[in-house]
Image (tube, rainbow, N blue to C red; front, side, top):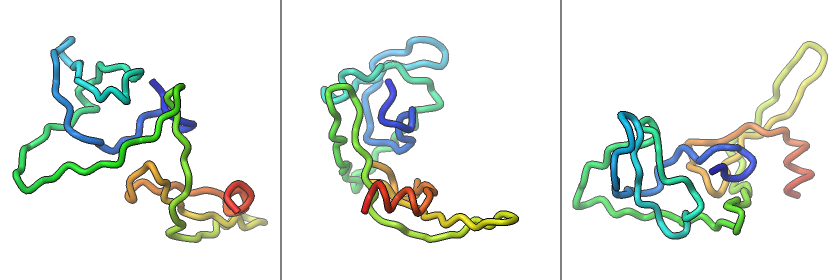
Length: 120
């Protein structure tokens, strides 16, 4: 199931989920939250990460606010960097934006003018 405009699940790991069964040599069925009911519950092994239990590790996550069609709205949290891309005859101002439903390590470059119009 695709989320939002990016066309992919966010690469961050939300929380540990129990593996229900092994579908094939590289696919596993996981127990998802009821809020993610419409998401396909079979994942390739490359999308899973082994969870090593640690008693000091407290799982704290912010649940996504999903609409009925399993999309969510992305809003910029902050701009962490301004940059100018210089071509032969023109300069394009860009901003590096951190989004609310993504990790801080996943910023994206956007046109500054586009961001000012969309998010004044």
